[in-house]
Length: 442
Image (cartoon, rainbow, N blue to C red; front, side, top):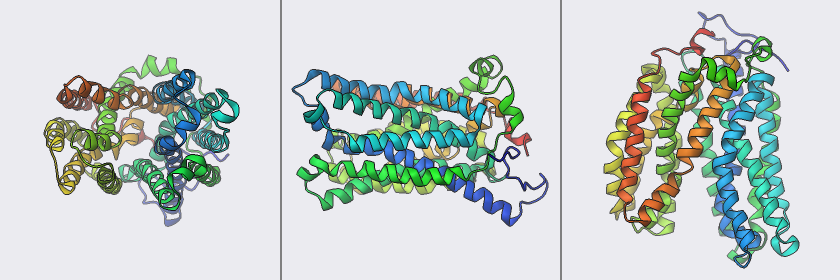
């Protein structure tokens, strides 16, 4: 494994010099290789959600309460339990053994989880062992995707060109959203080619095979990456240490936790929960809501580099302050307007406005966290803070929204999101005006 100076490849240009064309090409390839794995990881993770309607009866028959309990436990554990464990485990590996090793292991684990699901016998063949093995595969995927964020964010922030770090780092969310869109696209294509009986019988396995194959491609790309951490930081006794993180970087950790809580909550509100909201609260047909959300997600994906480049101009702190302030101002009006919207076009515009506000955060989500920690605990600090906040606030968004709706207090959820945006604003005031660590590493 080739060591390079943080944020550089072996032929790094001096801080004052513009990078050579060869240097720029190396950096761009590194961003593509790192983010390709990110796309595959999220594709595999979302495919499970989109295909569950077809394979659930084969693994979780309603006649067996144990199988149903395993289903509930699996959904809960993958979303709430495995993400923080993954954030800690892969953050520690990245800080102690290198970013490249961590990214390679996480994509292998995701590949194995997908391949396992694709080949699993059903309940009819092996009984309760089938849902138990499916749960195990899903936990592996949850562990992998929980570790993916922190390491990829760290690597992309370290390899990005100075002065364009926001732009380059924004591709983490381009590929995250791209993975979700690609999963939808594969399922839609299968729905056109196969009837419902075929999809329930065997067709649902195809996306998991596709996911496993693309994970192998991502693995091959990631194996070519250069390492961005140094032997010195990896071998230090503080590397990947939770004790060190909380001893000397507690303030940074809780700052990241604070704005990630709001960021994750509003992200899930206007992406994964929004389709259900359009159907259940606005009364839109499932197909229309799907079209609206697919268009919104594509636009949202395209927004990321624009808002990332903006942060290179106005500063990460200003991006985050705009996110918190605008998020607090628009959440209640937008969600209230969507509740009674009848036009799909108007729904598209309203959601697009909300996602533009969210883009102030998501475009720089990785780098604004990475800039808070020194190299020896960077992947751990970013990954663990993100995973904990994401599991608690992002993962629970749908449950909280539907729970409040069921007791007749749906609008309370709007104010809950708004309150978290106010928190994100005040926490963002604590951000340094210049990058605290990455700024000094060039």
